[in-house]
Figure 1 (cartoon, rainbow, N blue to C red):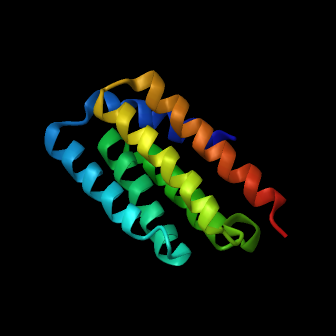
Figure 2: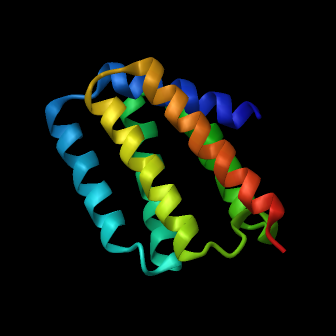
Figure 3: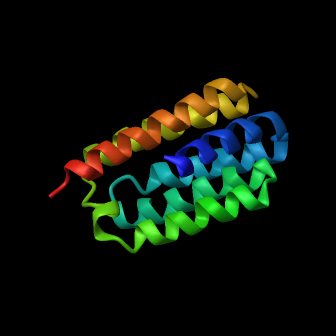
Length: 130
């Protein structure tokens, strides 16, 4: 729960701080993810890059280190990753689009809310996975 709160806060901070060049890069990352939607393994790798980019834009190295460290531990745990389906990836991608939209509008509260909802949804699904 603490990592989720940190990532939500860092996403809000990214929305406040992001510049036009970074918005373009975030859009490019989102486009790359869209092209990977039929490949769960590639999408998972792109997903990590997407989240790491948002954390880097926030400028908070400590928060980024905490989230990245926890993420690394979680990815090593089979129960974290699960077996996402194409439907799961589509849901994740819709969430990523909403996050990017809020960040690009510099809408920190919406960016934070969208990130929190995205993470909660992903965790709920993973916990139900066999």
